[in-house]
Amino acid sequence: MHRRSFLIGASGLTLVAVSACTSPQPTPTPTVTPTPTPELAVPRPARMARSSWGADPYAGGAFSYLGIGSTPDQRNTLATSVADRLFFAGEATSIALPGTVVGAQQTGVRAAIEVAVVATPGERIAVIGAGVAGATAARHLTDAGSTVTVLEARTRTGGRIDTTTDSDWPMPVELGAGFLDSVSAAATEATLTALGVITVALAPETSTRTPDGLEVTPSTIGAETVKAAIAAALPLPGDITIATALLGFPAPDPTPGEGGVSPADWVNEYLRNDLQLRFGAGADELSAKYALTDGTRTVDRIVLGGFAKLVSEALDGIDVWTSNVVSRIAHDENGVNLRFATGESLQVDRVIVTVPLGVLKARSILFEPQLPLTHIVATTTLEMGTVDKIWVEFDEPFWSTDAVRWSVAGGDLDITEWVNLQPATGSPVLIGLVGGERAAAIAELDDDQVVDRARRSLEPFLTA
Ligand SMILES: Cc1cc2nc3c(=O)[nH]c(=O)nc-3n(C[C@H](O)[C@H](O)[C@H](O)COP(=O)(O)OP(=O)(O)OC[C@H]3O[C@@H](n4cnc5c(N)ncnc54)[C@H](O)[C@@H]3O)c2cc1C
Image (tube, rainbow, N blue to C red; front, side):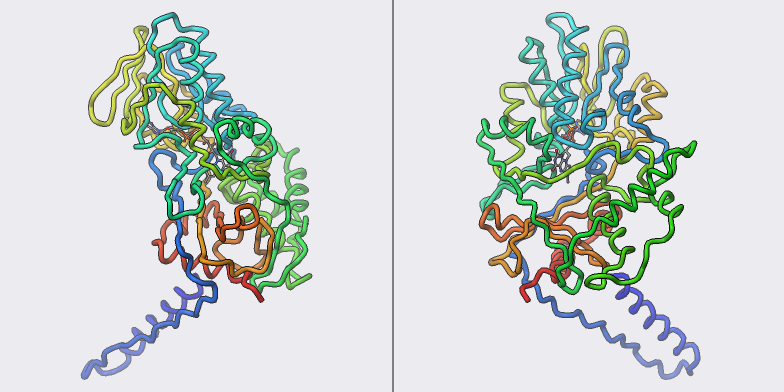
């Protein structure tokens, strides 16, 4: 991409220079020879679906991460109730499992218990947000006898669990959460199975290739280098980014190794295919001291039967008002007044706020009185990362591997991490994952461009 725009820019510059040196009469019509688009060897997919979480006004990104200036304790600060009227839940308030479905669920239970401790019988409780945290809180309070209303901005429930069920696809498409790691699997698998939602174990086989399609042995150089750089940064009095911590180390060796992949390439591969997808942010944004304390996000099982059922089932029988954007939350000793974007309002006794950190950071909800300074500092310093998914289904497989996880080391392809659903489902469906600035760049493209980027990025996996 960068190379091509450079070439077009350069030819434009040449034309200007030539016309400045020649007589104005007659003016030749400048013709620019278009840069030929190289043929894409990977076939066009039958269909494509993609997310764009960074541009989503009701999410503001995929999940929270710890950037410079933030600490895990700020998640507790964000979770702290205000005047026994405002309570907070959502993945960003989870210390144990931020950025996960299970972490969000746990915060919903915690907030429901906090409300139950202070509420008196007959009170009306509102839950803002019908994601998994809000649905869980609403379920617990309803089961305990409270009258609960869930207020949701979107036309659908589920929030960052975003299942699209379309008969054109061989399975429900998950554009938000879609995998269970070992911790989540233990906590959620039984619930999902009881709901009839299939989850399938993903075999650990990985195919790591160079951009030329050469299979290479995955290396731990990247993980080890970053770990050592972080260990060296920990005793420093302040915090620095992981990128800065790496600068304190000798630059990784750029000499090509197996398949032409150098140690420097392996460090980049780790930063991009691991950290950027785990946190949705680059090494130049992640806190060296704290970012990795948020735990790992391994991919152990994939949810194939519609993750959103977890939320819709929890909300069964509960009063949910979709398409209701809360724009102001005002509280006093008498209760909480909620105003909607439509101008209408609702009076309740207490409220559980589960909107994503990205919504709080954007200040799209006005709090009256304003939130305590500690909350404001937490919303300002905790950050939202972005991860997007690109689902593609092909008429038939063109690839030469049964591995479930594919990654590309070295080079500059746009999408370097893929999950192959064919071994688990029999359908030639691939999921591309992009994070951080790559996700932001891809989000700018139209669907045709994204399809072409996906096809180009999949070339290393073409059958030889
Ligand atoms: C691409 C992607 C992949 C992910 N992969 C995984 C994974 O594999 N495994 C995993 O465990 N987790 C994963 N996650 C994280 C997981 O989806 C979230 O941690 C979890 O769903 C968050 O739930 P929540 O209830 O805290 O927030 P949300 O689900 O975002 O719920 C908040 C709700 O508030 C609503 N809202 C926002 N503003 C307003 C307003 N003004 N008024 C009313 N309502 C409002 C939103 O519409 C939303 O429905 C992924 C997330 C993304 C985006």
